Amino acid sequence: MNLVPLMEWLGEPWTLGLGGLLIGVAFGFFAQRSRFCLRSAVIEFARGHHGGKLTVWLFAFATAVTATQLLSLLGWFDAADARQIAARGSLSGAAIGGALFGMGMILARGCSSRLLVLAAQGNLRSVMSGLIFAVAAQSAWTGMLSPLRETISGWWTVDGGPARDLIERTGIGHGGAFVFGLVWLGAAIVWARRQKVPAWGFGGAIGVGLAIAAAWWFTYSVASQGFDPHPIQALSFTGPSAEVLTRVLFVSDKPANFDMGLMPGVVLGSFLAAALFGELKLEGFEGGPSMRRYIVGAIAMGFGGMTAGGCAVGAGLSGAAVFTMTSWVTLCAMWAAAAITDRLVDQRPAGLLDQPIAGQTAATPHRPAAA
Image 1 (cartoon, rainbow, N blue to C red):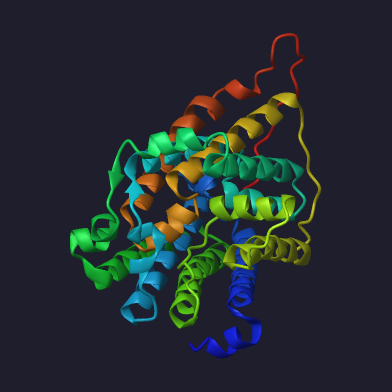
Image 2: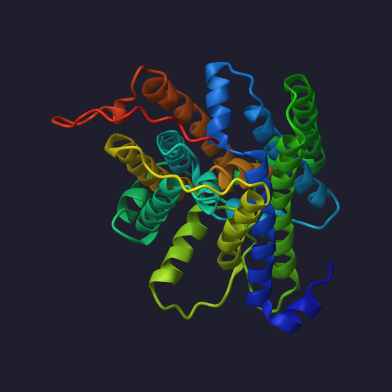
């Protein structure tokens, strides 16, 4: 698709912003309708339940992989120059950051993208958690927590290029990666039929996966057709959350970019979905102990996501879709840490972080937010 006329009309920065907005609206709408959530998928898997949430996540994952690899096979996308592959990566950061993110999303009862979706439909717990997440992410990037992040990231690194590209390292090629995605997509279809997953469940999840591929294709197209250099970007939420927070708090002369459109777009898409289906509802905290676990979880996710170089969407879907080694390490660490945290904290009569502090009256038990 030729984007040159659009870039000549709007300018390259605003073209990126518009694309981010439209893709964000699509992601937010489909994520809200499908109840897409990595936390819910992990809990369902770890507890041996069969409620369809794992299947929803698998639809999104398989669609993202299949669609992205199909674009590569058609010659419409090449991830070789994307930061996730071209730049030097950190395996220690991916493992430790991914584990912290997985722990945090259990405590905060939602990953960063899910918090944004819930906030748009009126969940005030998610609004607060999302703000803390963004502050922690920015602190880990350039603030007080950045030395710790850099130390962890420096323990075990991997060169950029073929060394970080699992497609190159395994020799499966884009065709093999495409087949890999198709296999998991087939498995998701079988499980969806057995579990009677509703149409919005699997249909919305497919929409989420297509939004991942669309972000890769669009930013690659602008980068390759534009006159000025632009990064090839994935759909992610850790870095963009910190970026948007900085632009809101401080006057910036930075031009518009993909992230500036993405975040408002996700909020708008989620809000529209909730409004159209009568799901707008203000919700708040139910006591101090539950608030404490949300704060701890949001901080862990913000620092962990920035250390890992991606969140549940940025690494778990976008990075995995291009088979970058560090993203797969991050995804595995998220699953393992989230399952362990759920076992230790939530699969008990009262979660450790829900216990009242000394001298405090026990609050009414907090029910996990619907995901």
